[in-house]
Length: 324
Ligand SMILES: Nc1ncnc2c1ncn2[C@@H]1O[C@H](COP(=O)(O)OP(=O)(O)OP(=O)(O)O)[C@@H](O)[C@H]1O
Image 1: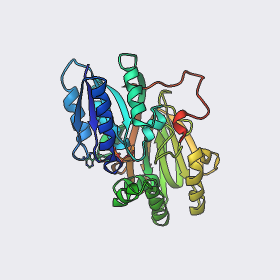
Image 2: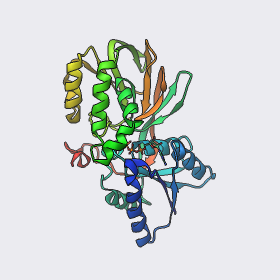
Image 3: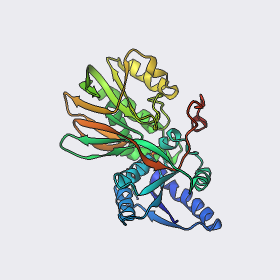
Image 4: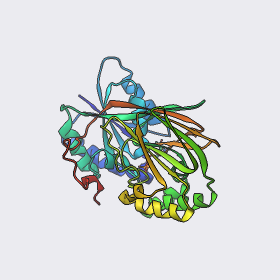
């Protein structure tokens, strides 16, 4: 069976193209049949995948080569057709997907990982389905956010600074830049969050993040308890917090220690409804997803992924993917 690679040559400031060339060389060496599809602009990943899987009956291996934005588009192209088994070669600046889904960070090791799993049983992972009130709908595989963190994620992703910072190997600093910038501009919101019909209202809420896996923003462990095969989503609400403490939170978040703060509330469930007093910016896997209110629903074990999760009860305290 042929492998279809969806390559975002612009990811990691264009460095993903060199990563792809080394992967392509390995595939040719190993005589593995493949087709390469290059994205030219935002949205192409989803469109290309839809074109591949529209052929009725057949089943395809679809491998994303890029960052979190690329895997987001690939998942949105596959769902709800269910005719693709997904693989991932990390070639972006953040690569939170590889951290959360036990995929090696090194692209060539990630290829080996994929090739070892072909023809074996893939791991079916949960995803979140979102429906904005009066706008875009789609799915996310990492996380969905509303408020302060969405402003940072979308601002950083769409900024020219990201290109400049990436060029010098300081890609993550662009998030720090937007964090400081938004810290002075952001006005806390009143947010009502319904989780499986239980309502909580937060006054002076800074942000709400709905997570399917622990990581976002290039290694921040925003939701340490999230697990993409557990059949539930974690909702982290940060509220009633001073600007100084927000800075502390964004430092401790790399170790997941922020969840001990009294200003951080964690809720868990399958159906989540978020309503804000003032329309707020939203992100899905770090990509702009609209402005306003949103309903989210967990779709359990719906995407077959070429990866292996540790056996139940055998979760290491430090994930391999946390290192380095
Ligand atoms: N050929 C292209 N030119 C410009 N942008 C593209 C192209 N193909 C895809 N895109 C868009 O580029 C954006 C960034 O891609 P991606 O997230 O994969 O890389 P990254 O930003 O380097 O990595 P990360 O999100 O992990 O930090 C996405 O919004 C995607 O839709």
